[in-house]
Length: 117
Image 1: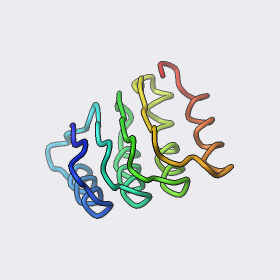
Image 2 (image 1 turned 45 degrees about the vertical axis):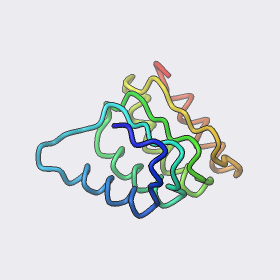
Image 3 (image 1 turned 90 degrees about the vertical axis):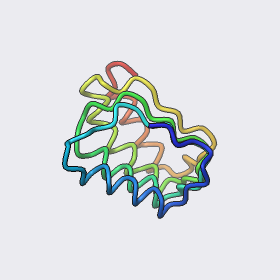
Image 4 (image 1 turned 180 degrees about the vertical axis):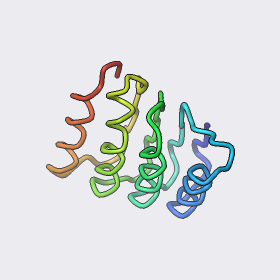
């Protein structure tokens, strides 16, 4: 799914992530390109909740969304299952803020768990 530079807000991200999680056809994203929006912490956390429901995600490009540690921590934690399962091969979080020790620790745990990243 590619939704880059669309002006999406954190509320928009919540609606999209909830819809994906609740879909009746069992569709799971293999890739998400959602850069240059305004997802912020709440939007990243919403996608983290969705990503935690399966383990076959390959690509996440969530650059330039104003996400700080509070939103990145649950995102990194949710992506660990995808990384350790070997499906996650690329993540782009450029132009966000991994500024807290907790966020750095969560990112390092994600990288350590990755088999194909």
